[in-house]
Length: 246
Image 1 (tube, rainbow, N blue to C red):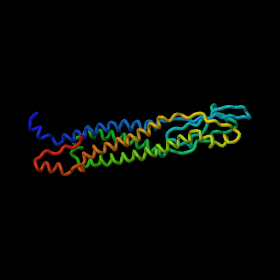
Image 2: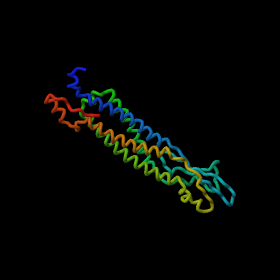
Image 3: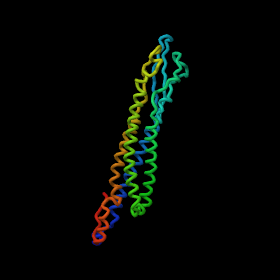
Image 4: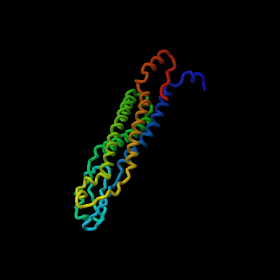
């Protein structure tokens, strides 16, 4: 390699390394955001209760099916076959709570993040020179990254709280809320669908927050806020511009 090239490295080399790091982060964002909204938005479950009628000597199972967006107050109990077990119209009894706002906020935000990652990746890969030469684009990217990290924290925290309430509303405590179970009918909690995938969605939510927060440092290095006067000073003195990036 010529000595001149060693003494005068390209001023854009650090930024190329920075852009490469950002592209790697964006790839992780896409995967993490997919897992976030897929594990939450695709969930379907049910709660089963064993019902016993002492007078009729009848044992049946009633089921309340629920899923995204978790409007539990619309999930009514049903028997199979569709009959009135113990002479009770179980369809008039539903689960308690409406957690659709937290769930939809979380999933919708994750989908928008996924779409933004695709657009950003196209910009980084196909229009690297435009991103590198335009001061406004890195600054916009930096602001969006900070806002996204904050919204991941807000949406995931809200969804984690809603998930805790959903587990309570579909668990053993539901028997106390069913009026027939406190009178002539004997009710026993049967089972509820495992919510492991929903727990994973919360984990990926906080993981996304960490990834976006960490990526803010790399995007910050692309902006004019990172040593804005060093580059111009070095050029005016004919020196070597200080390295930035990874």
